[in-house]
Amino acid sequence: CMPPRRHKLCVHFLKELKVETDEKLREAFIQCSAAETFLLWKKYKEDNNGGEDLQNQLESRIIPDDFKRQMFYTFGDYRDLCLGKDIGSDVGNVNQKINSALKKIVQSDEDKRKNWWNGIKEDVWKGMVCGLSHDVSGNHKEIVRKKIMEDPQNNKYQYNSVKFTDEPSGTKLSEFAKVPQFLRWLTEWSDD
Image (cartoon, rainbow, N blue to C red; front, side, top):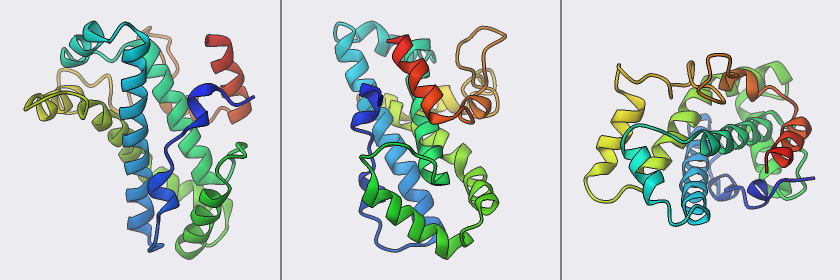
């Protein structure tokens, strides 16, 4: 039932977590999400005739809706990993690392885990958007990242305003991530 995008979810930094502190776990989630987005973008462009037009869109502050959907699904998967609700069978060791770290940070109370996630979710999303800019060559990286994330004229990719589609009725990221993983995966399969 796991969609192809999820088969190789980047969990390297979580798997290699040595020091189980609040800040190190937060950094590992951000690094994983950024690396995953970088790899997803690379594959997305390859699957779309090399992606020159897509890269031009990105450099013009536009994240294509099809790719943004992949980012939403990925963000939801990281949320589920953090909350201990991931249904994938491919991340057993990672789940143990996360559980061990979170027990030291927030004990085991489910509400405390949610609160911890709520404290890092915007940074995880920023990490994902930042991961896109790493595929831009030369000095454009910082310019593209700033255009997408920090331009007051273009706040549509901020955590609190980004939507599943650019339609006014589109679902916000914060609501989409709360959909149970099984239903998200089922929807993702039907999108493909």
